[in-house]
Length: 285
Length: 320
Image (cartoon, rainbow over all chains, first blue to last red; front, side, top):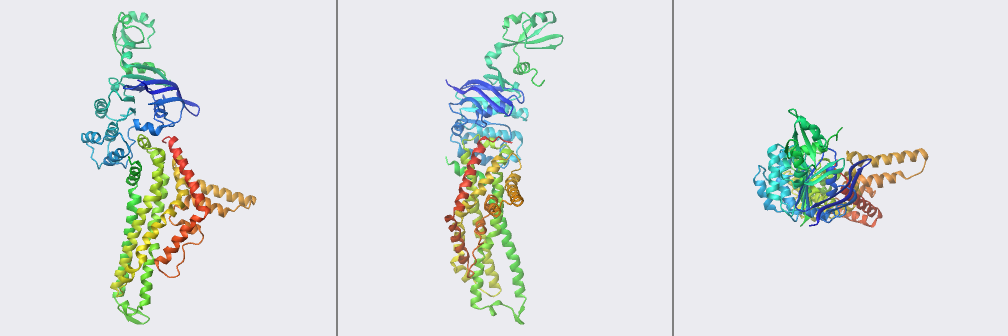
C-alpha cells in the first residue's frame, strides 16, 4: 500500500524561527495517527503544509499530489477540521448542508442529516446562536458525510466538555473510520484518544522525536515501581523519567526488555500522557 | 457540480442585509416620503388655494393640455433621480463588501472551513467579483425600478385627486417601461468601469492583516498627497489632476454606479425636452461610447491584474 502522506525534509521557517525542521515521515492508509506535541512545537504548521495552506521547503506528497500546486485536486480527497468554531457565524445549519452538498462531489447528504437529527440542531439555527459544542457537532456532521481518504483534525475538541469530546471520538470511530481512510489528529487531551490511535508521533521543536505504532509503544515503554533498595540498579538501566510515589521510585524505561525490569519491581504499561511528559521534559525550561 | 452557483448563493446568504434588504428599505422609505409629501400637497389643494388672486379648488381649471403633457413627462423623466438613493446605497454596500470579502474570513478564521472544501481560490474570488458587478447591481436596479414606478403611479394618483388625470399620459409613455431596460443596459459598462476599484479593494482585502479600510483609502490618498507635495515643492510640473482623477478616482470612486459620467467631464446629458428617454437614451449611448476609449480598457486590465493578485494572495495568506 502506498503512503497516504510521504514527506522528505519538510521544513517551514517563519523569519528566523524554524517551525517545522526537516521532517521525514510516511503514513500508510488505514491508520489513525495521533500527532502530539506541546504548544508551539510545529504541529499545526506541519498539518497546514499537508493541507496546502502554507508554503514550505522539502518534498511532500499527499495522496500522490503536491499540496502546493495541486491543492484543488487534493481537496476532493482530503477533509479537515482545523480548529473548533471556525464556521462562519452567519451560516445556518440548512445553508451549510446545502452548500457542502452543492460543492462537494463526495458529500452524502442523507448521512449528514441523519447525524444532525440525533442532535439538538435545527435547520434554521445559525452558528452564532450555537454553543461551542453544537458548532463542533455541525462541523462533524458535515465532515463525516464526506467520503474523504484523509481526514485531518487539529484540536477538534478544544474547549469542549467531556460529553461532547467522548461523543465526538465515538462517532468518528463508529460512523466514519474504515480501512480505506486515514485520520491524523492532534490534541492535548492525549488520554482520551489513546485507545483509538493506531500510530503515535511526538513532535518537539519542529522535529519528530517519536514515531511508532501503538503496539510497539506498548512493548517499548515500561513503567516500573522500584523499591528504594533496588533504585540504584534500576537507574543503571537509564530510565527516561523518574518520580517518587509513596517512598518508591516510579521509573519509565524506553527499550528495556520487560523481563529484565520485572526483577526490579512491579511493571505496568504507561499511558501516552506519561510517555509524553517524560519525552518533552524541559520543553518550556 | 455547479460550484459557482453555490458560491453566489453563499455570498447572497451572507450579505442578504446589504444587497437585498437595504435597497428594499431605501425604496420603501422613498415611497413613504412620497406618500407623506403628496398627502400634504393634495390636502393643501383640496382646502382651496389662490393662484394670482383667483381661487382654485382644482388644478383642472387652470392646467392647459400642454402643461399636462409636460407634467406627465417630468414624472417619467425623474426616473434617474428616483433610482439615485438606491444606487448610492448600493455603491457604499459594494465598497464594504469588497473590502471585507477576503479579510473577514481570515479574521474570523472561517477561511479554514471554506478551504476545507474542494473550491479553488480562483472560483471563490471570481464569485465575489460576480456578486459585486452582476448579481448585486441587478437586485438594486430591480428595487430601484419598482420604487420609481410606484412613485410615478402615486404622483399620478395625487394629481388625479387634485383634478388632473395624467395616468394615461404616464402609462402610455414608452419611456416608463423602457427606463428599467435602459438602466440594465448600462450594467455592462458599470461592470467594466468599476473593475479597477473592485480589484483594488479585493486585493487590499486579501492582503491587509488588519484595518483594510485604512489601507484601501490611505494608500492612494497618501500617495497622491505626497506626489502633490513633491510636485509643488520641486516644481516637477506633473499633471496631478490627472493622477487624482485616473488613479485615485478609478481605484476608489469607480465603484459608484454612474461614476463614469463625471469622469467623462460632461456629467449626465442634459435633456432637450424632459422625457425619460431623452435623458436615459443619450446617457446610455454616452456610456457605451466609453468602450471606444482606452481609459476603460486600461482600467479593466488593471482591475483584472489586481483580481489575479487577490486570488494568489488568498492562496498564501494565513488567517490572521
